Image: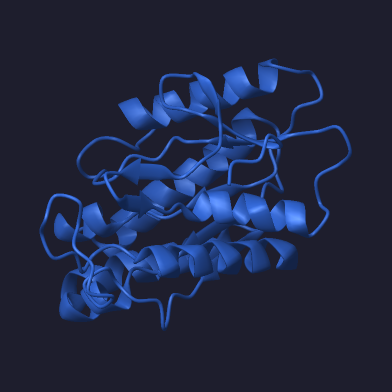
Length: 218
């Protein structure tokens, strides 16, 4: 159920009470919302404050298709959304950067070195721009079902993400073992195709919990 303590800033810079997206009779889970609910449940939100999730991610995008490098559209939008959010109230502050991307770059045959360089640049530039050198950075593994079927293209990217979490300081990598894909849960993508690349909704909830557990360690 929506909670008026948790809000979204959407890609068009509008604000809305955070809620899961419904497509017909399908509910599309989001690990960021689960993370936020865990944040509340554990009493980490200060009295009379609210939690704002910046919905900067776009599915099927990466560095190699020119969306997340420092001169690319989604990177620039992310930075502008962050500036806008911080300007809403002088007491606003960044609490963490949750990242779960990389499948597109794997499909485009990204090398370890290239993906490492781009992802490291992204997190360090955010910390520098907004003067939060210890901003937690949390990223996670792919769906094992899809990764294991495409290990040759996935391993360089996953290894790079894991290394960035290790090397950037105040970063942590979330494992996704035992988290099933939609196909394994016998669910279809809303468009009707069998979906092995995305986590099932049940798995998305667990992923959000794991991201929050990682956040507590930082």
